[in-house]
Length: 130
Image 1 (cartoon, rainbow, N blue to C red):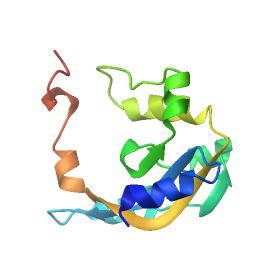
Image 2 (image 1 turned 120 degrees about the vertical axis):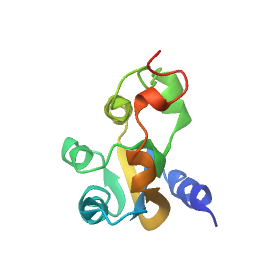
Image 3 (image 1 turned 180 degrees about the horizontal axis):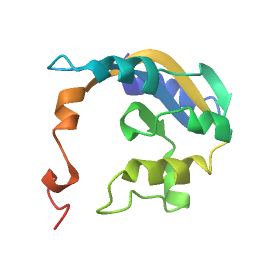
Image 4 (image 1 turned 135 degrees about the horizontal axis):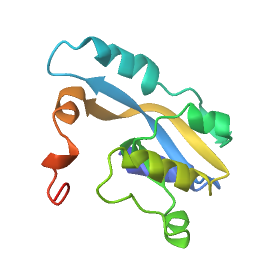
């Protein structure tokens, strides 16, 4: 099974959002790589959980370790704000305001390369900052 097959299987159980664990790696010896792994990206919940504000605040907002229900996005016209920094936050809070629950899948199904993401800023992405 791949990442999306595993997530989709959980989505079938009346779940609005599936979130999986992340393995943080770095090309250089960065002290905060361990912090990302052990604190920010560490899943604080497991299994199906009611998505209360407390749960939302304890969950990372990045979009790439999650599977979203397309109908929630389209029915509520949820988008990433164009040309804004930290647009993940706006998307997360708007999307989760329409969710009842989430499934936390305690498997590291994504590798986050801290060096690659750190070196990119919004101005370096085609079409942004123009």
